[in-house]
Length: 217
Image (cartoon, helix red, strand yellow):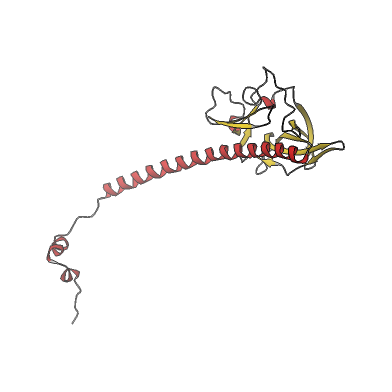
């Protein structure tokens, strides 16, 4: 003899009625609607994450630049010497790309020449310094050092540079026509004008004090 197990025998009377009547399942249309809503929400989440990720890259790049400026100034004051900060036009180290101003190198300066103070600092992937004159005066002026150098054995690397004195001031000229700043953008926006640019960071440098300040847009 075979005994059949029935869960309703172990339930209170009120709950037995729910099982005994039987409840309809979801229809195919209802399932498709739910899956569609989930897909839309998932897409919104991905777009939001991508925007957040891109924004964080600009923030990180701004912090790298600010840290390098601060370190150069502090080193000049503590070591009692000139410290040169160079902005180098290099390809992205993580992939093959055209050269753009995306790296920073610090050097001490003495009677024998220049000497590396630290390793080269790169901006995050796909992030560069804008080459537009109104956005990056430090990369578009004949009033600061503009030359070529060698990096990792490669010659002809273009750079712009200025120096910090031992009292924290800079070699940048301070006059009514000069506002010294760099703007950080995505490499796709490297030649976009200020009026058309949406996401970017600008770091301004006071030539008298050597201090810098960041602005987000």
